Image 1: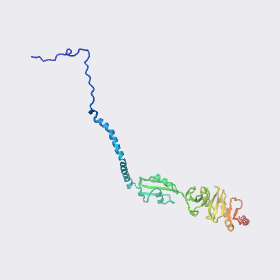
Image 2: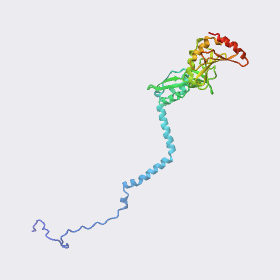
Image 3: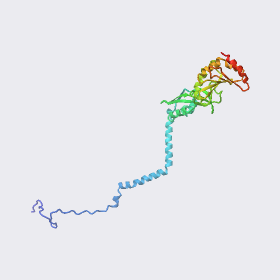
Length: 308
């Protein structure tokens, strides 16, 4: 019988092996050329086709850009109009205060509001633009425009108040208390309730002229037709009879009072007098006669000197 047991120990090199002190080298693997199929994997194919797809899509968009743009614009406009035109965004009421020269319809038109305030959406209304348009109007000195969350539009107007009619080189103009021209006037009788001032830069002394007329003696009310500015420092008063009263630069009211107290207008009415110089309070008035009637001067002066 054969004995079964462990294999015999390897006690030496096998036949064909060299007896050396180094380990046997493994044979080197040869570098193989990759196959074409491995070069075109899915990942690499995606990388190669991505630029092609991108530029192709860009070319399609460029070729149809006008159509795409028009369609997008139309949809955006439709959406915007659908939101803006909703009733809850409409201007519900209009409250205007402080106006007298301009009507409600005129003020609304200046701000760009059409008849029927609810025809305009509050989302389309710009209060600052509306205020700028109001202030640009000749009658408006200042304005405030506010739109509350409920859709009510509140407008407060500060108008320029006509103070006098100014006869300038450009014709007749209505001016305010500061002398700012407002609108043209048709003539001296356009506003008979306002004083008429004449002369270069007379508008700068409009308040002085008005105060002079308001403080003049009551008997002269309606007697003075206009005030003419002279040398930028004093006034000549023109009566309705065409008489020129030369007033002093200092205390012209006293000169008008003397003219009224001495009843000069009545005493010279029958003479051909064109002017009375009241600039020297301590001397009799200087009378200017029409040409050809100088012989009346002596008698007139005698009459004037007798006045208390």
